[in-house]
Image (cartoon, rainbow, N blue to C red; front, top):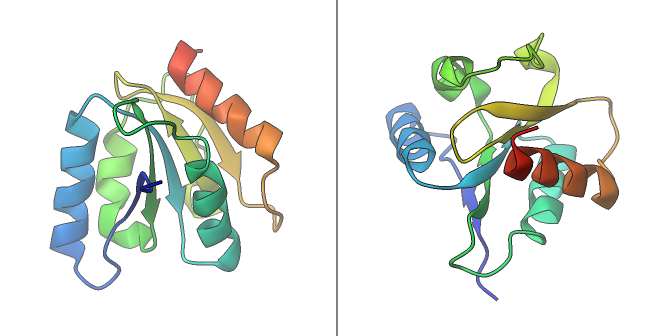
Length: 127
């Protein structure tokens, strides 16, 4: 099955910014995983297991270099002020209307499958 995981380039900031901007403009529910640690890579891979069929809106984006896309990330609506410190953020769940609906902090552990499913559901339900 083809993966619905987009990894932003780590060595080309302009391309990373363009790809993230384009992805946010599309009708997609996103889990955006931040960082290049093993936990970030494994979280993105784990989350991608639940993206569904190619025509379904769930997609995972991995941003290995937060500095390249931080301005774009900060511009995403966050009405509940979920993200307090971007340096401590592992993942944000973004609704199809480009609103942050959930986030997972970096705490040194891999998020459970249940926690990732919860993030997907919050983004899909606009909760």
